[in-house]
Length: 289
Image 1 (cartoon, rainbow, N blue to C red):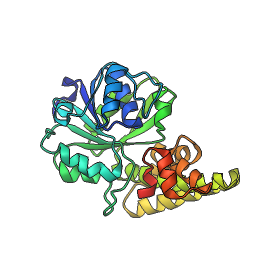
Image 2: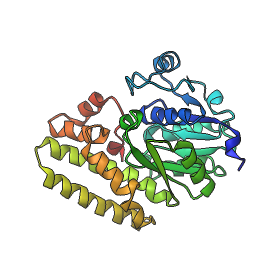
Image 3: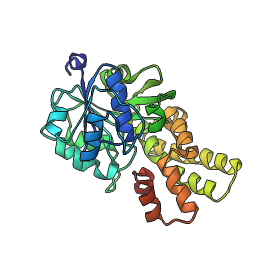
Image 4: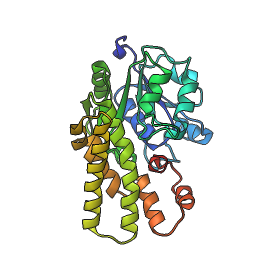
């Protein structure tokens, strides 16, 4: 792997709230950031107003972020690519970047989901398409709007490659966002995917008027279930006592900022699933998971 610090360009694939929040931190940390997206209005807003009005309205973005719909341009000469796209379109977009990615570029998934066909996590997709590239995942209690508004938060970079862990930790750490490292990439990623299911359930419970005892029961038993399942698949049980396990589970299951919680809440209030998804306007990964 080359010395990544020789390149101060970073690429974010995806124009959603979390990808934009990550792009902003990278820009503030000295990177020239190229953020790829398809929505032409969002590209215009970000390049002229420095604001993602669709997903992070009111948040001022660093002027070192350049939005584009040109994948080749976005990826060229970048030290690291952050794939921040929904799981149902993850493979499609990753395949589009094939032939554009150099074998020494670091590939990071921020997507907390499982591929609809089969049981592939997003890192599995990256490794299938790019078998020689260094790969990692970011996961934790990371509600994008809170991070974008500079509220204190922490996350985990997980990779089997120590240089990837160290580089991402250095690239994303700042005064309000702390990055921890973990070699258990499978456990970290699986925790992020599974907790979305339980967030839908706790949202439904809240809508039905159940109290704190019920929420505590659901969260605690959810943690036990997801931990047992993940360990049976080879994950480290200690991973689920950290940010990528119980931390992410709690944040997602109690906050109205959580998309999965909001979908569950809407269903609990009587909306059918299709109505709940439409009114959300964003992707709730727990539905597909």
